[in-house]
Image (tube, rainbow, N blue to C red):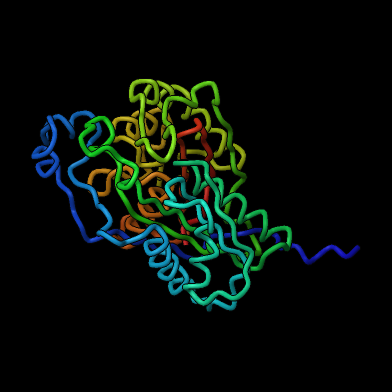
Length: 318
């Protein structure tokens, strides 16, 4: 048996993102349900969110984000041999999104699979991509987080409809002489699996907001610190903290406990809403686009959500 050449490390080569053009403000939602801008902002910190247009699919959004990341990486479709899509909102479970997106992007015969770890999905997929590159199972990997949550919402239920949104974010992972992706710290709290759920295809997404809030604000900062520790990075060395964009109050609570006051904290939720597995790459791609973070700095990413699942790692910003 021959062992393939192993890369010393994997790194993120580039990010890309896509958001639908349809903006839904808090005032728009107030026209159809008992809510208002002040109520929404005080509880979740969201001012507006994006919702896919009629006929715009999850695969459409994933393809746009993946294409942008691929272009930014300088690689061609022929250079990619594995595509992973993190999502929990496919309209149909078969075929998977990854094979469809790979074909649309002109990536020929790649490995292709989807990951469903809900809002933690991108971090799970990124950890898997890093392992594939480092063990020689793949040369370059396209990792996409994409969600179309709007098709799973009851738009009269203010406990969910004011929070969730649509979008996609992507990253290209390739080999590196030095590690650019730290060890992933992941886990789950299955005893709370009912806190976020969709009963079946005839039902909508349901969430026990207070249960999730208490869990996130008490459980996750040790995970964030452990991800730093395993990467050999002190929180004071972080240039950015990019948690899942679940709720602005959750983001700020974890950031305070992390103790990385110098790090730029992603607050993409204010204008993008909660896009589940898409939120971390979407937020980081937009931060790069706005010049809020610089290439070469270290970012701690932390995903968490339905399952309840969580995962995080330190990465070098491309």
